[in-house]
Every structure is written in structure tokens, then in C-alpha cells.
Image (cartoon, rainbow, N blue to C red):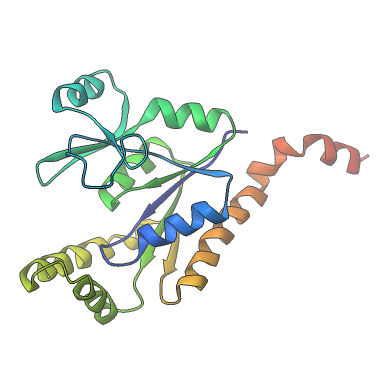
Length: 203
């Protein structure tokens, strides 16, 4: 039985990155998909851990060979997901987590219809604004732009399979863990894995 592809999206400020980090620490059966990007590494970022950093020419060559499951251009930089890596990991029965925006998620869901998509919501628009302001690194103009983008992102949430509200971090984390457990317990997943047991129990 192939592994499951979990897609996680959220507006900026919803706490997605922190939740995903904690989820991966809790669930060793899930591996994070590392995206390709033409963006230059930021201080502290490591090639192959945070992103696969490549030049624009290499990116375009890989794209031309059909290696990307989805791709997008954000603020002049290209980002993409490796299709061969995800296919190989899933074929080996391993679950994969893809952290991506809603537009990329829509592309992936069309190509991988059995993927499980999750959208993380803030508890309120006021709390989202407070979190974005609390970063302390953005001007009010930038915060306003992020808030406008967040509203557009949130408008797409009903296209996802699951909604997780990040009000209390611990509760939101438990929701993510529960989604993965439920998927692994589903009949589609268990039928092949427990074929021998099911046969023995039915005779």
C-alpha cells in the first residue's frame, strides 16, 4: 500500500510552520517534502534541509523534464515540489508531508486525488492580525498586505478535506496527529496491510 501524501496550507500568521515542526517530531512515520527554489539561502538555512537551492537554469531544466509536481513564482523566485521523490517515497509505503500554499495544493490535489489536504486557520481575524504585528519585523503596510493575502487564502479553505483551528497549540497539534492516525486506520489503508489477519479472522 503506498504511503499517504498530506498537504498542509495556511495563511501567514496561522502558526503552520511551528505546528508542522511539532507534528514531525511526534510522528516519525511522516517525512517532509523539501521544495526546490531559486531563492538565495537566508542566514541559517541549509541546502537539502530547508530547501534544495538551485540556479534558475537548473530549475528550468528540471521543470522541462517534468520533474515537478507543482511549481509557482513568488516575488520573482521559483518554488517547486519534486514529483520523482514523492512517488518513490510513497511507493515505499512512507507518508509525506507537503507544506504549500492553497494554489499549489489545488495543483497537487488534481494530480494526486488520494492526497489528504489540511487547512490551518487562526482562531479569529483579530488574533491573526495580532500575531502578524507581534513578529515585530514588518511595517504596518506590510502587515496590511499580509492581512489582505490571508483573507484571500482563508476564502479557499472549504476546498480542503480538514480544517484545523490553531487557537490552543497543543489542541491543534493533537488534531493533526489524529488525522494521520485516522488515515492509517482507514479501510483503504488497512485492507492490504492486514490482509492476512482479516483472512484468518473471517475463517
